Length: 160
Length: 472
Image 1: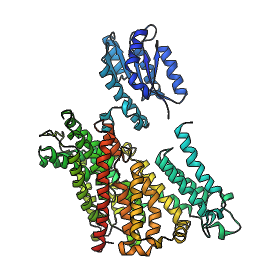
Image 2: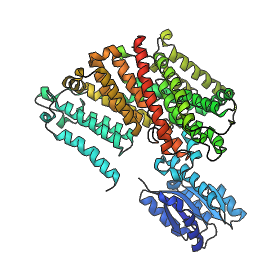
Image 3: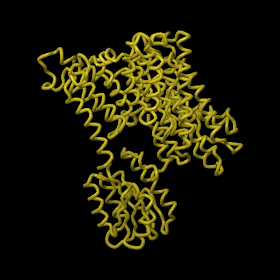
Image 4: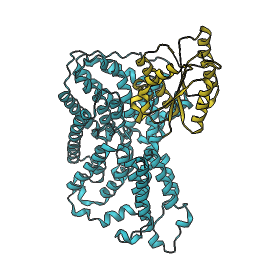
């Protein structure tokens, strides 16, 4: 089966560690990649794509040296290869303007404020993974622990 | 080595060995090379559908390709020419194999899909559920019965999976208020998939195994939409009450009041009215073929034409059609064609002395095998594998006549394929209910096995009664 990735981006190492620790639940079925900058994240995204695998969810911080989170999100959105990849902006410092840009231009899926709550983060990521799998037509049957039931049921109602 | 790879090697290896053996090694007198190839294709189908190294619909498509390649009139020439046509055998017309993609049965299901899609799109399903569930009040046992009846009725016309998905999402807010330790939660969660599985038996379009059965219910064995419902609906009703009772005994409900709150209101626009009217008209036409002469296959094209012409089902909606389900059935039909067309079916019946077995034993054997297989694999794939063999038996075994003949044995096996619901993997509705996290495999297994066994016994009883009243 094609591999699925969650890519986490934050320039602060300790935040990145805490985040991936909280996403441990998903490690049974998805690969979690840690990136310390937007550029590094893009390299990882490219290599995942070249292997024929999928970036299901991108979780990024906003304020980072060089390219910001919103820059990364915009770049992702403009690229047709990743049009189904779901995005989360995880930040405590995004300005009003950044946020507007993230929603309007980068079509952000979710905004989570730091410090995040583990349960809420899990819920959000589950919904996003489910939406990604359904949009891509990938098999979700073996991933029941990491997908959101309601999202799945709503979608399955449309099947014939 | 991964499990998947081992499965692939087994599923490809055995058919290849069968293909390479000399014809004489089968010990079947007069077996032709084409027939030997059909045996190999049949083993390929069985292994791929049972072990599932690739999706089941993909197996169907490969079967069709293999038949076209190896045993059709326009197949791969180097392996299809022989000096001795006698020992080589009969090729099957390639057009006939390709026609399985658009067989009337497939189009009947397409019509059903159009109805179901339009009903969901114009919220007919949810609104009907709201109206029908009202009279069942707030007593949990009655609400559960109501949910089961509605689920069963819907799954007669919609896919069992879509019906289960709808009912589970209606039920989700109710399940959330159950107190911890109240087994009623399990009862409710299992009620929906069980009712959906049982409900599918109710009409020819209720569930794909019925489609496979229709291929063999032709000529003298023909059965109309109305005739099917006339025996299947009473069966569904009784089994539904049985399932309700079993669930209530195993998982008593402690909560004394349940309030369902289904939101929504009837759509009152032109397109919605057309959907309501077409839905009703299609069902009426299906049930009154004796008045107008159109069979169910022709009637099925009505919703297809109307909904397409009036933009009720648009280009985008077409993408939601479950082509995989249709093609899974096509592959089953093609497999049956191969067995019949090559003459293998006839030959097997003639070499195996079935006539010496009691017809009762044969019926018992095939239905139990169907039920067991369907618990572990797709119901449709089970029907695809078993029904061609059963049909060959039905048409050739004179001792079966006293029990209802071909028609009876096809129906009894088809129903046996659909009543298996002991495990999460038994059916997609079971898998969905299991995935809600509210039930464990053991809960599903102990109630599911009992419902399945009672269903099987009731199945025999139904056929017995039908035979007495001269239905066959």
